[in-house]
Each structure stands twice: as structure tokens, then as C-alpha cells.
Length: 277
Image (cartoon, rainbow, N blue to C red; front, side, top):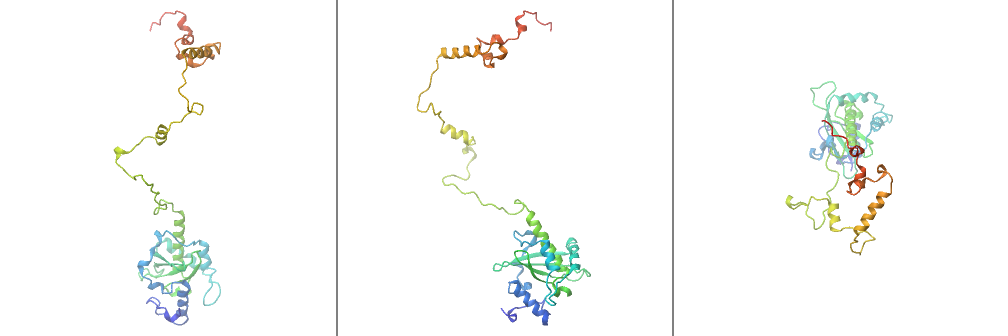
């Protein structure tokens, strides 16, 4: 697309000569193939509600403002004074920050309105910047007198707003935004909901064990094993004779009538009179 095919808005229609050519070069460099001021407002999204943003860091901001190449002189911009525009962002002078992402090139167009630093009652300025997905700033423009230099304080203030939004997005938890996970898979033959009276609230593990009771490997396939009374009594006698003193015998014998007498306190066998109380 040639320069003559690009239509310019009234915000930059006054540009002439090398300034107009440079602006047209920035439009082609951005990849949008149209003047950013002519993009319909409904295509933009609020920067504070973005779910995706470029990997823009303070290093990228410094790289553009200080180490960027001037399109007119070819030297480093070294706009150290513009770094003080952070105060503009903190003071709330950067408003209506929005962005538009290109589907083809993946570049981000970020625009805003910024108050004049010397005339607060004057109409707000309209800076914009184009940022690649990796955070590299391709170009910028502002409607102020220094905006042709592409590193005025208003553009830098916009970059500070972008960096703050990226930092907030990275620190946002999964519950701050829209749901990040999908719906569970539907199981065929199983209702997703039902009446309360028909819901089984029992323990699934217990319900499964009742439906499929486990069998001991040694007793699988065999009938019930019966134990004679004599065998049980012999077991208790052997259990009682395993220790000599009651203090060393098992507590199981304390609940058996024929063995519990030996565990009674000695005071009961002395025949002492009952307490007066």
C-alpha cells in the first residue's frame, strides 16, 4: 500500500512534508494499514479489563524512550526528561486507555487521552503507541507539539499506563477474571440434577462395599467356619495363664465373669467398714 492510499484523520490532516511522510511510514510500520485515529471505537477494549496484553516491561519502556532511534537524526532519542511523565500517570491524567489487537500481525495499538501539563482546561491530547507481542515499541504519536518526536511526555505516560496494566494482569488470580477452566464432561446415562428425595447421600465407598463385599482369600469359596464352645474356653484359659500377675494380663479378661474377680482392688477383700460419708 502506497502513501497515497492511506486516508488521514483530522487530527493529523495538518501535517505536511517530512512530518506527513513520517506519519504515513508509522501507519505502514504498525501493520494496521489505516490511520489509528480512524479505527472505529467499538473495536477497542478497555485496557484495565484486558485478558491478554503484550509482554511489556519497564526495560522495554526505557529502551524506547532513551535508546530509541530518532527517525530524523538517526541518533539515540535519550529523552530522559520524558521519564518524569510517571507523575502524569500517578496523578490520573491518563484517561480512556484502550487497546486494539491486530489479527494478522499480532501488534497492539494502545491509545488514550492525556491532560496538558501546562493547560488543564485545554482539550485532551491523544497519544497512541504500537507495541509488538514481545513488548517492543514500534512507533508512537501524539497530537501535542512535541508529538512528532514520538517520545513526548504524554506518550511516555501512556507507556507507564500500559506497563501498569501488564503488571496487574500478571498478578491477577484465576478468580479475578472470567472462568479459566472448562465445563466437566457429561457422563452418558447420568442425570446432572434431580429431586432431593431421590438423591443418595450415603458414602460412595461404603455403598460400593455393600454392593460388592470383599471375601478373605483363604475363605473364598468356603462356608462359614464354626468354633466350638470348648475351644473358646480353652483359648481364654491359655490367655489367662500366659501371665502370672493380674497387672501383666490382658484387659480382655476384665470383662469376662469367670476371670474378672482377680482384677478387683485389694481394698474390697479386706472387709473394711463402709465410710461414714
